[in-house]
Length: 490
Length: 140
Image (tube, rainbow over all chains, first blue to last red; front, side, top):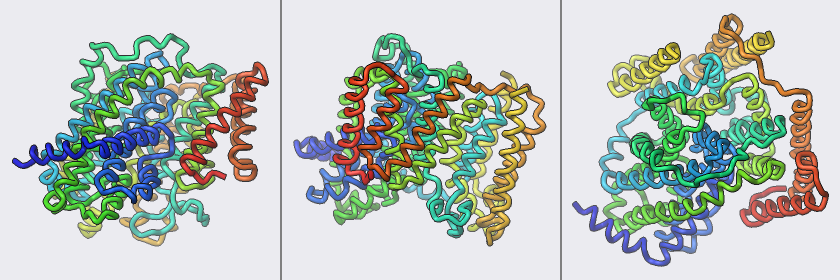
């Protein structure tokens, strides 16, 4: 087993002052990118990619990778404090994290987000260290029918996110699916729902929708009530009590497993995986009714899952040269700039580089925990900032965030429109989470479905003939039926 | 009664969206396993959900609309926000942001002008420094 000596050499290189410095810079920048809504890791890495040109390959990639996983840590902060997900993967964190903040428990929510991110991120790295090549080989065997099965499985989450009315939850999901269809058809390239305009050709951007549904809606709700939505109660303890931490251990391990396994599959985004992890946690809880009302496991699960996903994404990237997410695609271009061709031979031809980057990710995770835990008190105090000051800040960040996606005021207009839609949905009792989930899953569903039908010459039997696809579809349908029965009982 | 009316309205909106989706599916020049598949299937789902709303017998929950004062505050904020977005490309980020922040601070906080102006300068100049100058965002 050559892994441990290689890893030891990697640590020796990762702990040199230069590599440590760039891991630290990347971690800090990543946290900032995650905190700021609209500025995601993809654009963060893309902006900084030219600046790394003067660096040798290892410190450059160490810094860019740290921005990626640092953004996953930072994304939870604004999700918990002001109901604005800094990152797509943090959307589901708002469900319980923001409720905890409103109950005066912002500190424990932020702390568990950091701890869960650290645990899952580090365990994910262990998986990356020891199983990268064989796992990548398995992931490569997953074809469009199996992806379709996975998306069907993911869609079963809609039922448990629907709140009191299933009809309203399904309607919200259908609205999200409709929004996802706007733009160019992913396979044939024909225009859909663009009505002769060119502004809608690129589709309705996901970030603009999230900013509208969460940030702008939240400000409208708070302004209407003329009272701050956050708690006026004393902040209390900043760390969660041991009893809660103990309860979250199993949650973090489950989230790591879900995040790592699904994160190996290209196209399975951290956003979708965090929803699945949340749903699994809710289903396995003895008190699922606490979820959505400030359950600490509801923060630990998605935050753990999205960080495990981040680590897992490096498996197909390094072992096969396949980027699992857009951010990793930009990172891949960074590798290629340096003449490094990811793939099965990377571990053989460039062992020093690969193991230095992997070792630096362990170090980066520790840095992020050290950076984030002491900052919990500072961040938590943000909820005490008067709402009259917070509201303009949230709205300005929203406008900048929506604009920064494509440097277009059309996206800002979309964010405003979805702010109003979100406000009306809340007032009429329609949940917004199924809309977001459907917006994430519909493009994956459409591509997988149509590719499957195409490869089977139009026969839907392909989903029955492929055992794994059949199992995933059956499990998805069974979970949906289980959720429907559970709803009927309660 | 108000809750039932809201559900009927939601049903009509969903029916319209479903019809639009079906029309779009028919408009596309492709087969039903190609580009027409998703708009067509979603159109059927939306129409089914619309029917669900229209014939639902479940007790309807009344919408939680705010009182007149609350409605006025929401409307004023939306008008201000739309105005800010319209003026931003014309007046530039710093000036339009400063006016927007000052207006919002005065409306939400009241109190002394000195404090409002100080906060306005801090927020507008701070955002300009971070986003436009440090991060190099192409804000107007």
